[in-house]
Image (cartoon, rainbow, N blue to C red; front, side, top):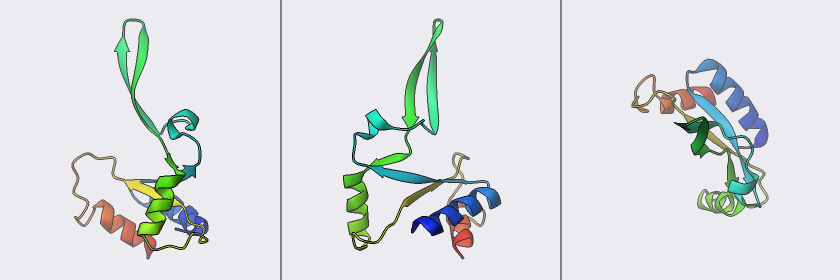
Length: 109
């Protein structure tokens, strides 16, 4: 999506559905070293301390981003940004009337 459309989509999607959408930022540096605050984390409690087990980063390495643009047939000069959308309820079908795909299409119209 273009940045302008992505901003509108994320705002409308998050306000009108019970699903979640956010931007994915492409970066040239190592995503694991330069990542902003993760969206979600799973912590394991150990004696008097916590150990981070998993983290969902909201960045993407630039090479992967460039390959996705190429697979989509987009010229390099078109400024686009990736938007990631997901359903926080585990096991809910994405293809039902209240599913993720239906909500994405409604918001895009």
